[in-house]
Image (cartoon, rainbow, N blue to C red; front, side, top):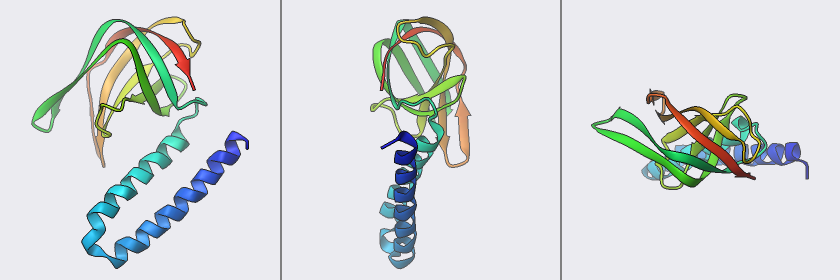
Length: 155
């Protein structure tokens, strides 16, 4: 199956799931919180399938040094993320300049935006990175940091 056929198949599947969730939300208001959470997760999956144009959804990055990304004023607390050594990420969004990355240890409302100049494996790069917090229409962006890294593996 070609990748465009796979994406079309998943888009149809997600549309069907969205329709079923919408019907269930109308029928059982007592379970609407749980269904709303499931609906939001499906929407996030849909966005990630549509937005990631790089051709891969997993990446391993080796950071040359230790880099701390900060996001002040996240509610009443700060959120920091250290990038150090070999790390594994899910690519949730991308364009020709950057990748939005997430690890399993991060809350789903946060992404690391990492800019790149090349996607070639083992090429050393010095680019900018930052933390982004998104919930609904609320969006906070942390300060940019210069980061040294190289891509080790993509799939």
